[in-house]
Image 1 (cartoon, rainbow, N blue to C red):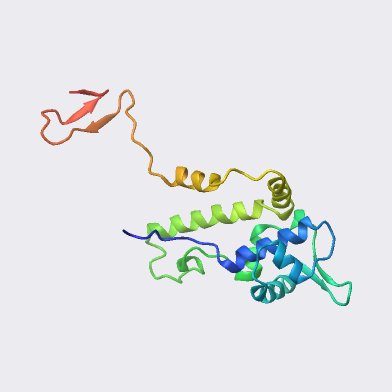
Image 2 (tube, rainbow, N blue to C red; image 1 turned 90 degrees about the vertical axis):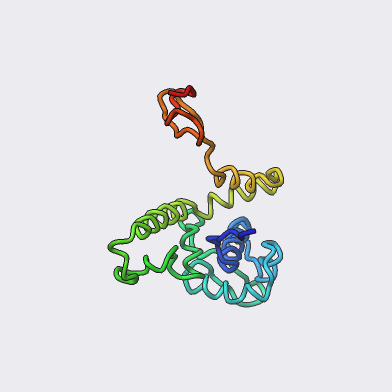
Length: 190
């Protein structure tokens, strides 16, 4: 069986989103790194470098001392998912050919180049639209009333399934081998 190829969010980016959500739903309360890791189900050894990147990007503030901890550096509504992902991963790019003009010698003649560019623009637009405040509101609601198990998985498979062919009035379709007619029209052989 052929394994599917995945465009996949990195573990670092996933953990970064989780820690940012935990800081957001803490409602201004400072969390220690240990608390944020536990609440977000993030392995603590991974969190240090992720937090350093988030601090460097100006998304998280650290406070030293016995009453120290972590807070969001900006209002949650002004922090997009793209901000968080790019803070830990760098600039998002779906394909090498999109890094800069001329990166791929075929970029001016390759139809896939345009497709990758359009897809990247759509993904980035969605990531710019989603902010921490919106995701945190959804997170609070889901903690009160979790979605049914497998709901997002089912949605993904519904979307990723090939479309089913349907016959519409006036449509013509090739006839299977062995038939006298060359096309079907309106479900009737011609």
